[in-house]
Image 1: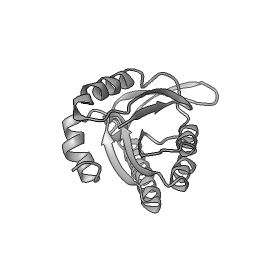
Image 2: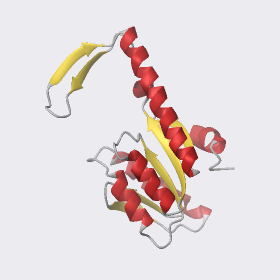
Image 3: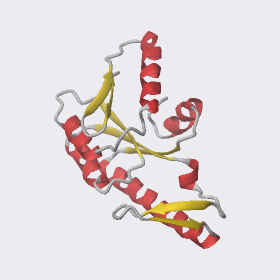
Image 4: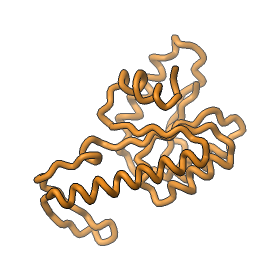
Length: 173
């Protein structure tokens, strides 16, 4: 097993790890990756192109919220490279179910202008409907390319992932 993280280009990697005795090395690497998760933005298309250019590709497990505008092109790039791919679509509990009455600050990505508002039931319902449509679109794209798609929450324990989510998605037995 080899694991590589990207933010446009390779940022770190570990492996190959050839036995179960190396599992602590993998877990330490992943823990360090978790600590660096919010350092800068990620260009998933550049990462997919880098993977596609590799001679030995293995299995790709793409862990992302897939909010990037180029998400479909990214998945198409992996499909064209004939890379076995599993997509772990990860969102926080707050992204999945924003609380009614919560005060939020919206920031215009183009102007940087901030707007404070309180979430009401109508806003929550509209948001959840759009999120469900977005998630279904991702599932449809993954199905079209023969990719496993697993919807996960960022607060899931490793046990829940390994025993529940990844097993249901066919990634582990």
